[in-house]
Image 1 (cartoon, one colour):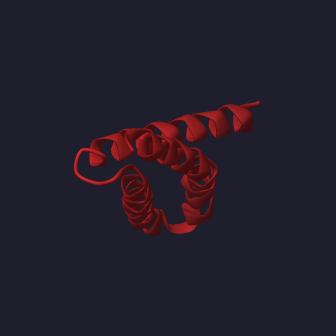
Image 2 (cartoon, helix red, strand yellow):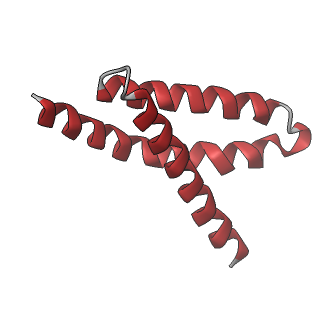
Image 3 (tube, one colour):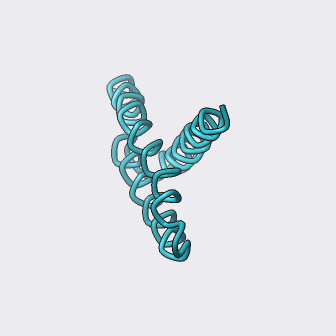
Length: 87
């Protein structure tokens, strides 16, 4: 039960982080590029903090890495729809 709740929390956190960051970057970048930049920026920041986790690095990577990879296709589909709608 606890692992399932933590997994849902991680998925919700990743979705929130990526969509809010991509939304902020869409003000200065095209939607698809903003989505990719948001993913890269979030992965870089989370990766750097994962390196400081010591012996807990693998669970920390799984906590943010897997949900980020699950959210990325949804983020890209949303960005493509926005860029197609703007034309």
